[in-house]
Length: 249
Image 1 (tube, rainbow, N blue to C red):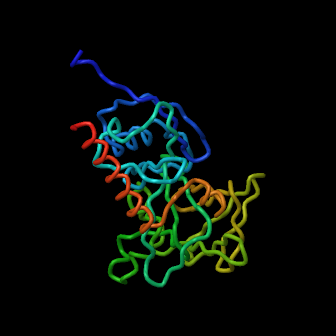
Image 2 (image 1 turned 90 degrees about the vertical axis):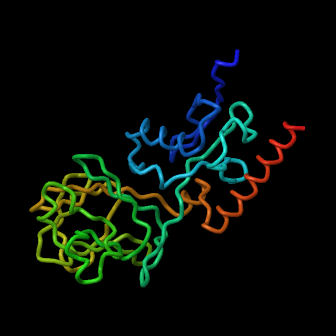
Image 3 (image 1 turned 45 degrees about the horizontal axis):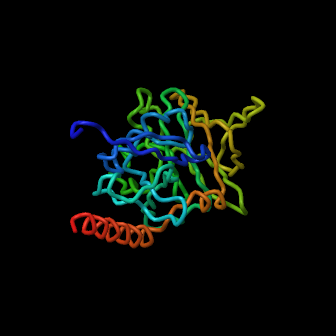
């Protein structure tokens, strides 16, 4: 029947949740599926609420799907395995890329911040524009109800000798709460951060949980550089065009 809906049965890797089954309409495009994934898997700690940060790629060769073409026209066999990947992020001038996947998850609203460069500043963008420092603000806490209690440049996260370290750039008190409940003051001296630590900003009562994935895990997820992503998208577009031409003939 012409009015019947056609569905595809797919498997999708979403960070550490491998091969999640998905039954999706063949007529939707990859960005729509990404948006649905972001909505459905809100409990995945690493997942941000911004679907534009992600694209879908084939698990086998890492080739991205073509965002402009419906899923049903992209040669996806039943139970094709896809991977939710992160787009490469721009690195501010003077900053260095991080060798880790670093995320901070705010504990009251669940907002996730992805940190892709170092040093990464936790603070407020509003108020930093006058000083030309907005590009270095990786975690902007201005929008929170208590955001005005956060210093413009409050904390700095960077890497040293294979460790993630944090330092206080202000006189605004902050603490690390370890997994065992012990609280460590964050002073000007750099101290190590561990996965699962919580960064507590005392005056604003904002808590940020530290989530880490190693560089090896990052490569395993299948992310591409910007150049590789562009090349693979071109290849996917050509394959889809060839498939359409074959159908027309």
